[in-house]
Length: 362
Image (cartoon, rainbow, N blue to C red; front, side, top):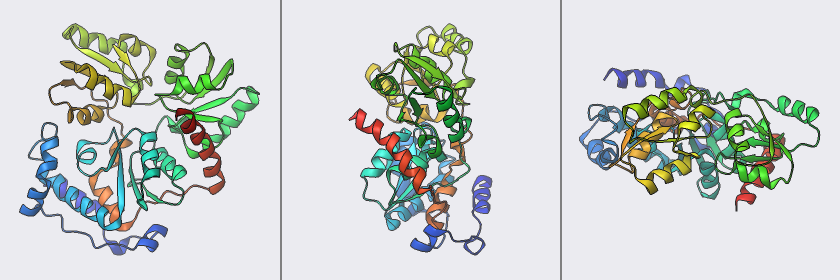
């Protein structure tokens, strides 16, 4: 109950909020009563059944009113909710219409007829959706949801790299700002990074900003890779020593890791792959016990589709992803906040680098 009261206090009143462009265009909705009623309990019971093994029953009465009213309000607004794999289960399973990695979300958003997109992820993901959906209204429930990796490089840094390495093509991981995407030749994901690098037909390629992804790509290709010094603060915390300790405790455990992890971590893994490939590996291999070396909530969400697998969770959480919460999502739909706006010139240049990758993939 204390959590519920704190969430209510954080919402504030309609009168206290200045109306932005989206609120002016679409209007503000009355704020719903968030009591946990029998109607809400019945309506959300099928959703809770999906998450009951990761969300204690005592917590559901706090989440359920938000889940109920968010789903009702998004239907009224004609909105869709995109949720990244690192979102918490009550968001991922409770209110999301489309789930996946950042590029999957943006691509699916572009296909949707919805006029309003609520991006449950970090800010660069909302920017990517806006880049691919320039005519749609893109909202992020908390514009302060940043990313240590995206923040490690700026557009000015890319321009300096071009001066230092004239003629060398530059590839940017999609985990970058619109400003950075606008300065590079093409984008990539962790899933297609090797393919993108080799598609350029160059002996040397700059791959930024994730130094660990770049180092891993360098082991998969003959192309010389110039790296940047960025890193994801979540994946960088894992160590090879930590994984060896898990194996010593249980030799039968299977370990799968994201290529954003340091090399000593990848050396201990049974499989290295992107978010989507890790999920596919779990479904294909169906191990008895698996440790997913990535953000903790992803294991919770994959467990929802694989209840027979024992997921060991080292549980490194992304503090930026966790800024996105049910009260803020509801807030976003009520007040049409916070709208993502990108300078049209930057958006146009960034769109070219993203679309080059998309066309290559297709």
